[in-house]
Structures are given as structure tokens and as C-alpha cells.
Amino acid sequence: MKAETLSLVARARIHAALGDPARLAIGDALTLGDASPGEIAADLSMPTNLVAHHLKVLQDAGLLVRTRSEGDRRRTYLRLVPGVLSSLTAPRLDSAERVVFVCTHNSARSQLAAALWRRRIGGDVASAGTIPAQRVHPRAVRVAHDHGLTLDPTGTHHVDDVVHDGDLIIAVCDNAHEDLTGPARPRLHWSVPDPARVDTDEAFQAAFTDLADRIDRIAPALHPGADHHG
Image (tube, rainbow, N blue to C red; front, side, top):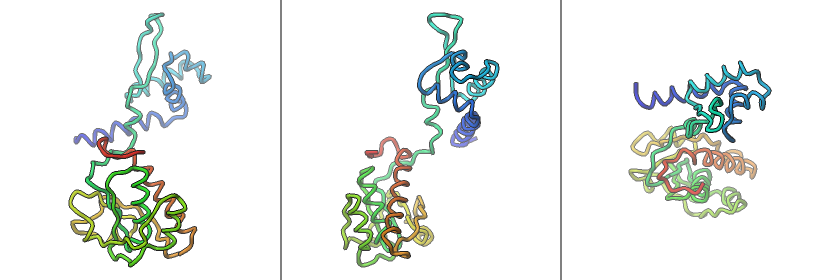
């Protein structure tokens, strides 16, 4: 079995162990500090035999360990295994020399995504389009300005002139994701609706919010060596 498959099996076992309200409550309690089984039972108002059952499930999943008290040697304390909960996050992305956001016209979504990435994560980032427009959409410039970002109204570019080997390409529209099937094929696809189709300030704000949420979500998955500010 491949290592990544083993990792998925281990993560699934942890998810299953935490998929009970009582066990999740125990996990929450131990996140803050160590406790004895009796203390857990008292704090959660749970019968000791039920606590023992749940603790065995959590221990079998590799979530906690027991240590003997240095005071009363008859007492044991429970503590979470460091790093186990962090293993529930999605696999990390390998580091890339640069991130390139791509949409059809490079006039809104890809521009906003690059500006957001530059501010929230940092590092080398660019944007491009498969059929670039002559100008960035005025509503995109406006919504960026409203959030303290600056877009160059004339700064649109074609994919062929921007993308290089080693880039992490993220398509932020369905058309770009489906059209780019060659060497510049996107690694990731974010299906963000085209705000220009509706052409209202609300639509552009919705696209901005969608992109901001996705960038915040991807930040923890970046390679540990990647340059990001969180």
C-alpha cells in the first residue's frame, strides 16, 4: 500500500473516532490540557464506564496516550498526541516558483485573485487570460480599491506570454480550466462565477469574497518552505 494511501487510512480512522459527540467533547477538553479519566467523567457528566469505552476508541485511533502520575502513581493522565489533529488537514501543496491565476479575459477574477494572494500570502504571483481583454473591468478595479488593493487597468496579459515551467497555475473560471489542456494545464480549478455576466457591483463583490475565502483556505496547505504571511 502506498504511503499516501496509508495516510488517508489513518486520517479516516481519526475522523471516525471523532465522529461521536462524546468523543469530540473529550478531544476538545484534552486540547486545553491533560486530564485523568475520572476528571473527564466529572467535567463532562459522563458515566466512567462510557468514558472508558470512548477513551479506548480514541487511543486505538492514535489520538491520545496515557502517562502515570508522578504524584499518585495509581492515577493516569490522558493527553493528545502532538500533531495528530493537524494531520486531518488536506495534503500540502508542493512549493512552486510562482503562482499564476488564469481566467478567460484576465479582466476580473484572475486579477483580483493575484492581488489578494500578493497581500495575504506573498511571494511571486501573476495573472493571465486565454483571451485577454484590452482592459481590466472597471468594477474589478473599484472593488479592489474598496478593499485596499490596486489593479493596473491596462495590465492584461495572454497565458502564452506569462506562464513558465515551474508555475503553479490556478484556473479561476471554468472556461480556462477546460480550454487549457496543453503544457499550461491548471493544477487547481476554482469555479468562480463570472461577475461580468451579471455586471453589478454585487456580483464583483461576491467574486472577490469567493476568491478571498479560497485563498485563506489554501494557505495552510502550502508547502512549509513556501513564502506566505498568513
